[in-house]
Length: 457
Ligand SMILES: *Cc1c(COP(=O)(O)O)cnc(C)c1O
Image (cartoon, rainbow, N blue to C red; front, side, top):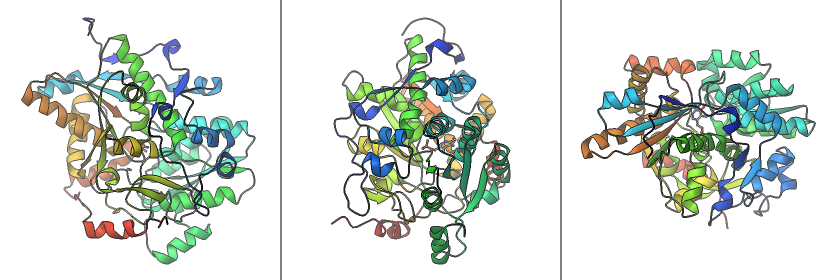
């Protein structure tokens, strides 16, 4: 540790920004299990994947060996409009908690989409444009990904069709209007506009939807429309790759001051921000150079890591996507509608699933009201009004800092603050009015999801 005074915000200069993404898979001894064709149960090839994804992204998806991939200049140019994002030393929070721990957070909410999702949206839109496509389709849950993709598509003049989980479409009309401001068309899912949407509506009348349903609809729309491909904002290997920019910047900023973190914490929905944040650090751990303690934080209402099974599963409710081996609650799992955060996906990145199964990281599930208590505390002390998703990481960062107060340990804690919560005020309102419940599924509740897992032999 150098004795330079550490500023409240550590910024990088433009020339210090990463020029390559880092692909953790290259350093993994146990590679993530391959995506399987649901018909033949054989590993998917680039050609097969290219029917659904852009060619270059299909290649990135299956590339387990190239450690560094150049960030194209046009993407770097766009990154420079809102990056590097600040790494903030939470001096005020430390003081309030009376902890000897040193707390840092990497703030990704400083763009109109309000989250880290723009880092991958701009990359995916770029490759779609390169390929000469007319447009892309996607799903969005809480709305951040749809917003990010709308921004990226308008930058490259691509058409953007978004299937938005119905409960969010109704709860977050302003999110929808931001997307339309950027020229996207937004359809509540499940809808009558696709075959799979009709089927899901027939099986679950009145359903408020799920990410898994919306994915099925978006894939069907892409495959059925000339000049379109499907893009996804989380879970996939390519998304973790693009999000490595978060971790690379974090590491460069810490290195400037010779700071080595002990604990790195992130919320986990599909795993993209966490995967991105931990990438370069996990790389060091995998290569045996350094050791870090990583914690994935998920909602107790959708506990993929902590209560899920490590198995091949469908990525979507309609079962049209390839099979992925991941920690999952089953594609038939539909989380409760009252859960406020957007961490509702039934599965988890195959990369993170493998790392977790290999004992290289920890996972914790936290309850909703405890998350909002942390969110409010953070907003009042550090000034930023956090997204409910991000607040899962805040919860555990605070818990760990409080533990340090009790043990006297001066740990260095880094967590990912993935976004702002201005569009989540209905959730905050429920919290303030005492109407928020901590729904935790019983083992019985989880059963139908597990029964929906594909039988592999
Ligand atoms: C989408 C989102 C997440 C969760 O997605 P991951 O792929 O797990 O990172 C977390 N925070 C915010 C603000 C989001 O928009």
